[in-house]
Image (cartoon, rainbow, N blue to C red):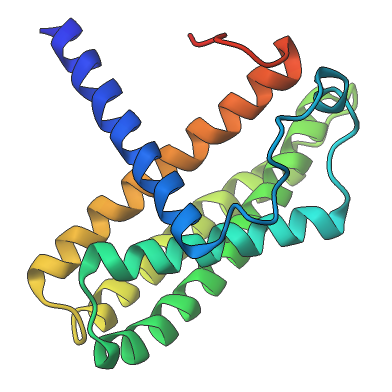
Length: 189
């Protein structure tokens, strides 16, 4: 059963990747990228510049919006109402994730230090709980507002899309890390 599940997951991931790549090619997304794969020494170079990272982030966000519009089957009217709600949600979510990341970084520093920082650790742990509560509230608000624009089926498709998209992005990042570590080739896990 597990083997069939893995095969099925692999098949879906392969089809999904092909769908992404062919869609990008049709829209000219791959036109900016070099036709030849990067040389192995290029894969071990320093991380991209902040400008390049920002461009990559924008490209991923554009891809997400385009794919989401297609997957949900949004009409023009729905798109004009939905995406302001979605963008507001994304902004709030990103801010909360940044705050959480900063608290986690600081908590890690305190735990690793030799000095006692009990009160600060308690404050950060409390802040993480409050951050999670705010994140849940923001998600509930988004679902409520999106529900005014999307049908129930589209709302369900949105949940599926977000899960698949996140999984695909993580897989792509893992692939890049593997290529950086081992060079190009079939180094699949």
